[in-house]
Length: 222
Image 1: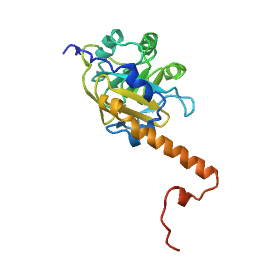
Image 2: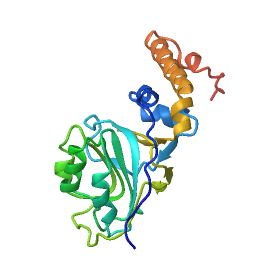
Image 3: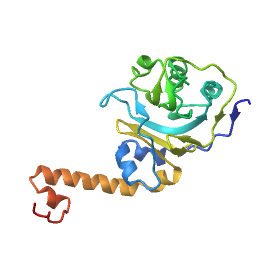
């Protein structure tokens, strides 16, 4: 069947998403109400400490490898600050994207790419400091068809539901999806936990007992 393109949702306003730009994924996963952690098996291409942060609004694509038709159509539908989220069923046998398509995404200002499936040309992709790539697999074999797929529909990506327009955060620790209600109403507990962590660090650095800092009860004698 031909590629299906649903209408894109109205984007979350920049004023709503901007406060999340520096929030670590770990804090969002732990504290943001409604946050959806994406399978940790989807890993960044670059080593820890070198991975560019992934941050942007989800553009969703559903493909059935080896067909990658929707991947071609979506190149004309993305823009600055988007994150392309590709649901490929975890398939390891055919790469759904490589340097040519990723290069076009980058030229259009896309922040990065999450693929629950395979990618290739990873030396090139990992060399871009302004384009973050997370994937489940790497393989040299490319797709063999370009006729089907769905764009701008809810997808299952690494066990997490991703709706078009959701906010995607990615860093060395992994990935999280924040739906609109979390983006607009979930920041306070994240800020509170961040403040508490700063207090813990200061108290420990000042020589306080860990048992006191973390409010532990007395341990049983051995």
